[in-house]
Image 1 (cartoon, rainbow, N blue to C red):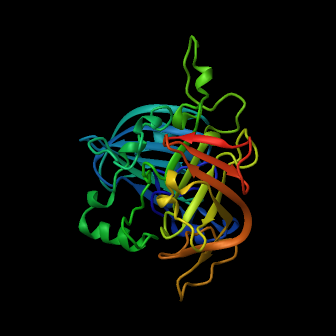
Image 2: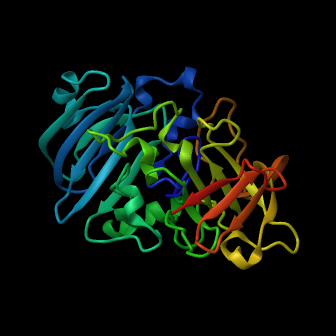
Length: 344
């Protein structure tokens, strides 16, 4: 699964890909220990971090490969191999700073029960499609360094990866930096908040101690996030992804944004376009012809080349790009005093 998915609290396009391992095609109740897949290092390096994500089957691993290149793995089910001893010392919600050498192909984990998050960060490269990279310093400092991982792999492995990527159009690994200055396209943060971190700017004024994390009283850091971005697999379709749908404390939701006949696409929605009302629908999926039927209880990834389209009508949203490059948004068909303003 390429970079760029928008789902639940991941309101802005995600900076990690996913490996949809084969065991997910087996109903969860039928999986055994024999269904675990060995997770191995893609290159020589040093494991620098092992952390629990609050569950006995969900962990984070960071490998430093040198030259400012890192691979990061999230929701890893079982640290194993070179991490077996460290794992025995890790508690839920725990964190270990490590210095464990690892060779290419050497095992450090086992996976069975969910997709494995994977990304490559390259500190020598900077994504050019973020209008304000500083917005990510308050919560996701790695994000602007998200790299296309395909060129790092040798030919045979790269070919296998490319053949399994769901997205068939370029860039095959997806795109997370979709900001187009002066248009509605890309990532937005509620005015009065400190970017990706989601904290209220007012809480920092005259404060004796600064902190990162969700704003006090909000349900999640992404309560203040908004993305109007192309779907990660089917870039012909736009997704309206919001951290605040009905509940101002945060209730992340994603909808297909329907660009109707004669309407302007959101990457062409400019200040001169005025306020435009779009319909929001559920996302439904279309599989390529000949795709095998999914097994009941399957959690496997959708097939390569699937498409999306609108389903049940959910709501409407009015959007306006302002002359100062802010964005006005309100769920409904007209602006009222409940209108929200977002900035980059």
